[in-house]
Length: 84
Image (cartoon, rainbow, N blue to C red; front, side):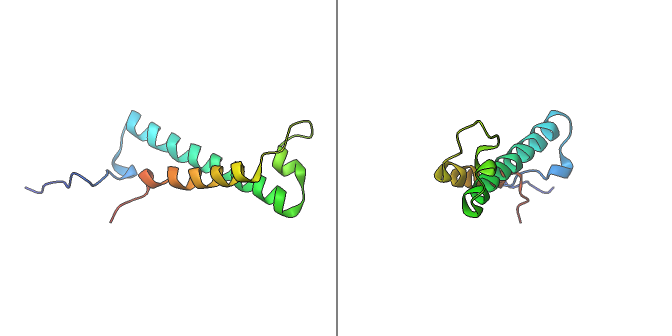
């Protein structure tokens, strides 16, 4: 009998039902967060405020907030990555 390591997470392929839906939702939320942060940072770097504000009548996202969005999106992907 093979014992599973307590620290080992199940692969996304092996998940079914709500576990699969929740893990895919987590991945999509992380990717969306990274995209928003990256878009806002590119807006500041390239001098295009529409990318940092997402609409002309909105206040632009502060660069530090955009950087934290990017960092959070990357760290949010950690639980969904396969382990060795």
